[in-house]
Image (cartoon, rainbow, N blue to C red; front, side):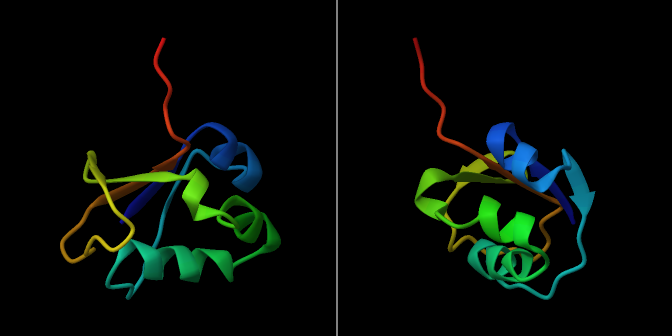
Length: 81
């Protein structure tokens, strides 16, 4: 699946997107896998309460299933104004 990173998440990881092979059943399991890759991933996902996630371009929760998913995006909460 494609994993996209936006704003400070992208800055910490150093990539805007990557293709990831994973057996993760949920977004949270994917996050756990990513955290163990390198320190930059651990830093980006240290506090998931500061993150939002979209699964196939729909705002989702971290317990969302990944079966059949093509894209997961991580980004900080958006503010309006």
